[in-house]
Image (cartoon, rainbow, N blue to C red; front, side, top):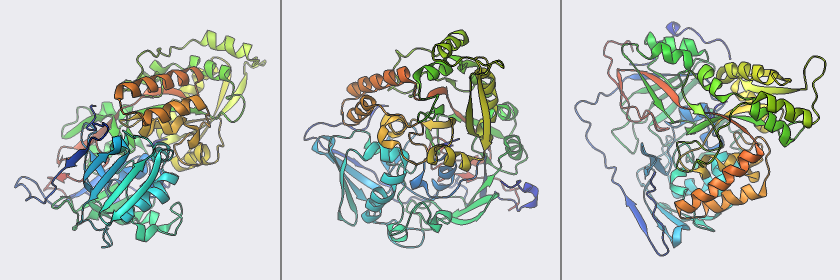
Amino acid sequence: MFECRAPVTALKDHPRMKSRSSVLVLAVAALLLWRADFAAAQIAPEVRRGGVLAVATLNEPPHLNPAITTSGPVHTVTASIFNGLVGLDERANPIPELAERWQISDGGKTYSFSLRKDVRWHDGAPFTAADVKFTFEEILLKHHARTRAGLEANLAAIEVPDPHTVVFRFKQPYAPLLRRLDVIEAPILPRHLYQGKDPLTDPLNARPVGSGPFRFDKWQRGDSIVLARNPDYFRAPRPYLDQLVFRTLPNAPAAAIAVETQEVDFLDTVRGPEQLRLRDKKGITLTRSAAGAGGSYCINTLIPNLRQRPLNDIRVREAINLVIDRRFIVERVHFGVGKPARGPIQSSLVWFDRALPEMEPNAERAAQILNDAGHAADRSGTRFKLRFVYAQAGFGVLAEVLKEQLRRVGIELVLEPADFNAVVERVFIKSDFDLGVASYCNGPDPDIGVKRVYHSANILPIPFGNGAGYRNSTVDSLFDKAAQTVSDAERQQLYAQAQQALVRELPYFWLVETEVDRAYRNAVKGLRVWSGNTFEEATIDDRSSKQ
């Protein structure tokens, strides 16, 4: 299940669809001013205009409202339709987008954004500060797991002094703000279309209106979503493509073959066997990144339902953690891509506590812990059963491996695969599971993607929040204090304490720090694979292709 159907119609039956260091320096009475100029420029002669770029995706999104979910399949499409106040460059540094400049004052408690005056929604209505205030207060802070967890407790007010200025006021200094305002973490929606309606059920979620480089055109369920170039985009002359077509190909081998045969131009997720298949193919580039549409620095994580027995017992969780062989999972499930996880924060981030121990398997110790906890094996060797709810398209092989590993100590894993959207409903909305699994993305700052998983305020029926139902007031306090601390060194210490507490209590089982391979034809240029907005500058130079 990723913060990533009917059988797919053969592609040949369709028309050819393609032709860390912080920038934030905070001190009392200090003022940071960032300016950037995005004035339109002439297209360089070598940039080719036009064409249709076909993107293969393994999971169809349930809807197209990115402000109510952190789901990867949703953001893969909608990052080309919407914008954030800021963007992020290749090093995750904030750069202007809907906001052309900003000021930080009051020791890091006040952020004032000056908005662009040349932005219009796809229906022609002007974009204003009222859209920003509405999106945060009525949608993001209620329904977006990462934004809600990071901002709700500390945000004092959002003010709109004029149509082109929006001011965020915090109760305490809040250092991570700028890095959580991009199109993935905080997409801005049109107030005039959503006001007074339920954002979870609005029909507009199936035909979105944004401000981004591409406009929604049509959606053929189970097959494709078509976006058309926005001729009024405020970053003209971008985009350069005429169309983006997102094709749903849930069969990973078939998706890889589609890239090989030039039926599609870009594959957003390349799984293990397909990595080997495409690695040395002429005319195809395989690129690896820790970031993507659903987030960045992700960890595949098992979610135990702590609301019920036996997983509410720390001894049972310790035993399960001891029987999981993470190195085997990296090698056999992920084909050596990624590394065994040691805790809730990816080890490549500066926030990771390097004192955390490696999680090595020990089945004998696990069996003894289960015996001591009163879970003796019956005549068949089974101690108890756990229902494992997972998305078959993403975690089918992992499920079989875990079933075999847990069987070694008498735990029977009952596999209950379903499609992606059904799994999200069962795990995060209805809590109808014993074990679930998700790819939880950290983001560049723990306040963005880590806190939402463990803070008790995020035990809500919202996708990719605190699905385990974990409560620990000390951990809550550590995350809250870290978000209000200006010094990165002090924040690192607070996050180290939080990690140590979480590793002791094991509210989740961290499996693999993942990286994502993407494949694209060499005819495609200008991709921004580190960004949610991958295709804004993309071009396709394939004069022989059929349109």
